[in-house]
Structures are given as structure tokens and as C-alpha cells.
Length: 362
Picture 1: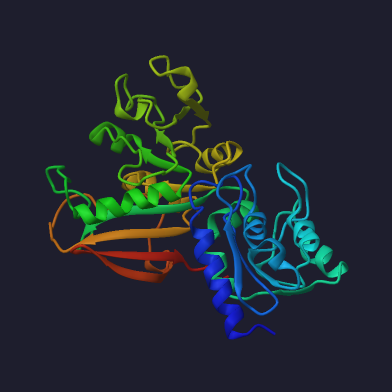
Picture 2: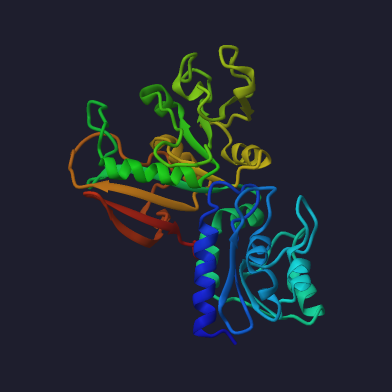
């Protein structure tokens, strides 16, 4: 039975796991805390990069011999397979840990079974401590395993009356410098940043992370169906971060660097969103930050491919101009995509609202 001390240790493990956001794909973020037989913390660790030691290994190295007879708190079920690193379940057994508490079961069929291996070796195992919190920090990887596609966060900035630009098309800057800096944090936590042709053509965005030391640059993706928006010399084509230009299979992309072109099947309204996400998933992308305009956002919503919404609302009114979402296939209030607001935070003068889609009633 988990105690208050157990919950505190797991909460610390979740904090540690979050340090790996943006740098571990295609692997999960995982945190681990080791206490000795008396309950004193003797080791901490988190998964820092794909191919590197797992969280349990870092924590066990810090704990040394003090881990024997102690407890390991892990945000994800210890792995049970040998990949680029050895099985963490066996590492815990070898270290002499007598008790393991983990928050979330591993849904990956290649790695699951660690809990059974631990129990077979006589280790006391418990699951579910702060499960919801641990799920939240690892939601991108869990979504990718369960659905076979990247987790998608749609980010937008708008005035309080929902306008993303003025009637004359001007949009810099609707939100504050503080909000724009916060967006770079979101970029640093994701594997890929995606924009549409309208944004690429109008804003010539750079999409790289700035102002965050040690950040892993995300893959920059422009959805340019006809290959007409991204031209030679566009900022997205520099060497600051890797880039893909997603174009229709029949588009003339001869003006683009060949290694940046990603051909995707065309639909009646644009590129096939499911096929695009599948192609990114194949490339190891587990989390996408969708920064495109209203048309691309609408296509993702229509495809059922938005897992989280982050809206930055500025205390301003425009009264006219484009809205944040268009062409989402919603024609009546009964079809509205209802959201569960999970967080509201002031960022400078703005309000950042985070929400997740509610499951539709059948």
C-alpha cells in the first residue's frame, strides 16, 4: 500500500522525467528515485537521450550499494528487453532492490513484462502511484504507442474575440514577448513543428528553438501541398534544424532540396493528414507541435488528430480578421469538439489555456 512518502518520491520521479522532454524520442521520458532501506533518497535519474542509459540505471549508479534492500520509484514499468541498453528490471534485481513502485504500465509489447520479472525474483511490486500525473508527462510517447501516430498539440495565438490577425492581414504581434518565449519552450519539448502553406508563404517562419540552452532542435515541417509556398532562400531551409517540406505526390518540387521533400498522398482538400503523421512516426517523431494557420488546424481537427490545444489569448479586440480555426468539418453545435480545460496560466499580460478533447458520446 503506497504511503505519503511513496507519493512524494514518485512526484519527484515525475519531475525528473519531465527533464527529458524533447530529447528522448523515439523513447519515452522516464524518471526514477531510489531510497535505501530506511527510506532516505540515495539516487535519482532520468532518461536523457535515446540510446543512452535509462532512468533506473542513472539512479542505481548514484545509489551504489545503498540501493540494496531499498525501494525504486519509476514513472514507467521497468523495461524487460535488451535494445540499445539492457533490461532495467534485471538491473534492479541485480542491485538488490526489494521493492519497486511504478506509475504506468508499459504498453509497448516489446518492452512490457518487467513487473512480472521483478515479482518472479521476489521483489515486491506495486503499480498506479500517481498514475494520472505520470501519464500526463509521458502522454506523447504513450499516444504514439497506443495509436501508432505522433501526439499532436495545436498551438495558436489570438485576441479575446478569437482573431489571429487583423482585417488587413497584420498579425505581429498579437501576444506578448513572454508568450512568444513560452512557445519556444513548447517547441523544445516536441519532436516536430508543423506549419501550413499559408503560414510559410506569409510569415516565412524559421521554426527553430531560440533562447533555451541545450535544446534539441525539432524537425521543421511545412505542409505545402502544391510546393508553391516554400521557395529557395526560405528561412526554414537553413541549417539551424532539420527540415521536411510535405508536398503532394504529383507536385513539382524540383526547386526544393531533394532531401527535404516528403511526398504524401493528396485528398480533395489537401494532403492526407493520417498519412503525414504516419510518415513522421516512421521517422521517429512522437510529438508534433502544430503551429499552422486556421486551414491546417481545421484539417487536423477534421481528421481527429488533435490531442491537446494550447491557446494564448491576448487582452485585445480586433472585431474582424481570420479566426483560429477553419474548415474543421463542424457545421452544427451538436458536432462541436468539446474540450476539458486542464490548465489556465497568466503568461505576461496574456492567458494561456491548455485543454484536451473530450471523448465523444456514442
